[in-house]
Image (cartoon, rainbow, N blue to C red; front, side, top):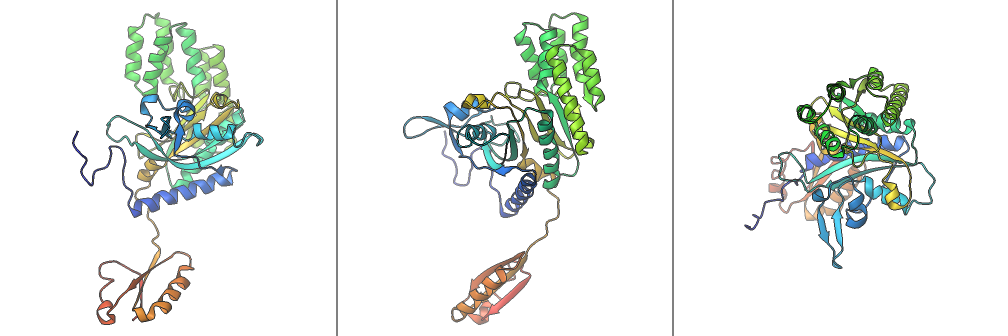
Length: 391
């Protein structure tokens, strides 16, 4: 293997120049402020976690984890999401705090993807976790907050698609009893949004025409609240029926929030079916073909940290949101350059301190040794709104 060139970076990581950092921090600040106004307090967890605890509990498959060995030979991982680390904290440092807990975060996370176009190994997420409330109201709260957060971030046009893993679990168990491999193959096609592949598998399986038509009917379950009734007509299986009832209750609460215009029900959406236990959702911007946020209910996770509790939450994909609002005009700060000779050091720096106390002002200083040549040496290369000379 050849040695990397001096300017090369590992695949999937990138540098952020000052303009991009300013945009990222602006999104972060707006969204975290929105979350705080909903009662969510920010938390920061370590970049490194133990593989045997947080690594195994995360929603990320093992092959996508970045693994390292510490000096004792113990396997650690770069955090691949924020949900599992926050679950660890909720079950330890916050174990005596009453439920529900409302926590927010903004952090970089890491995934060891294959060298696929557009897949980032390091990216940023801003999100929340609502721990200790199993109600439809809690699920609706995080969906409504996701909508408010997208608006705060500057995303103008988007839709939130709601699904529920219980519906497909129940339907598949009813239609394909004890055929776990076939159930998982169909779920995988839906997880990949491969509807053509889903239909192809149905034709390959040994199914009656009525069962095949029933399972193909899932692909039409996408729309408004009328989808709830259509889903009830498709199956009466208990788990599936309970899932639909829960989704209907979530829809009603979202209607009370006044945000239904941004929401649709999509029962083909399952999320990571090994991780989520109930409602799942994804947010799509009209400007991008992939999600800008995702979330859902994960009631089994905290049990792994010995504090069983229901939980729900979401994460905004901050990197992708930067692409959506890429053309948003940014109000530039007022930039001042103060030039001074050594003899005027005290006066120049005192003036700089005075000006920096003003809102929206950036002050740079430049020491020049030749007052005559220094007066014209700077300003041509960099644009300033004002140049103050102590020469």
